[in-house]
Image (tube, rainbow, N blue to C red):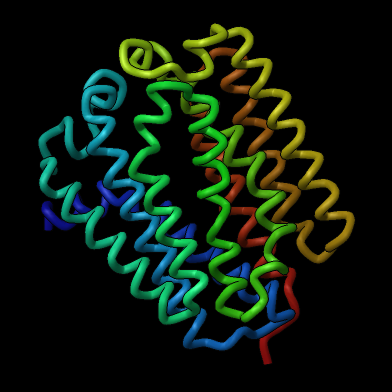
Amino acid sequence: MRRVRALAALARWPNALLAAAAGAAGACWAAGGRPPIAPLLWACAATVGLAAAANAWNALEDGAIDARAHPDRPIPSGAARAIDAKALTALGAGTTLWCSAVVAPGLAGTSAVVILLLLIYARLKAVYGPAANVVAAVLASLPFLYGAWAAGAPARALPLVAVAVPVHLAREIAKDIDDADADAPFRRTLPVLVGPMWARRILLLTTGIALIAFALFVARWVRTAWGIVPAALACGYGAARTARGDRGGPTWYKLGMAGAVAGLLAGLPRWP
């Protein structure tokens, strides 16, 4: 059981579940209600595999940084080994490619590109962290696209992706601010490049863009307000924590994302 818990932590199972929920929301959104069940399940499985692969590979690449900033994580704590991360990455990537191909050949091609970007993400962050943050924000927003692809209308997910990207980007910046001291010897992240003060200012600007996107979305789709408004407040609180130098801001962004997905699912037309 301890082994299972370590592997689940390595895959960051809450992130994988959130990816699956976002995939379901994207499918329901694109279908205008109930999407075809079989493609939806395959698409959600693809997002779970992708999240597991991304998180396991990131844990492997971040071993030295996590030993300084997050010693309780599976690899630095000794609960999991590097070989576990490699195996989980391969399994997750294979699952993603297989399940994507079942949904549509185009989605399989998209998944192949996404997996390639995931594998070079750490190297990109070592050279120029802000570019890596943008890549991570876009990739983290793609579960909506996966779900919409299952409904046969991937283009309909683009508004959801556009709203999600600034939220994920703000969270990536908040994570880098929290980990700036540990990142400094290894990566050229935003706070390392421009200093913590300017990084916090950019975080607030990015969060402001995210909150405006939330507001525009709620104005167009009022039924989602019950979940979107608390989500926006959670993100705002996360930004405020990071801006005043407190840790834990990224967790509030994650809670905001979960609330937004829940609000979106509840606000969509009822399934027959």
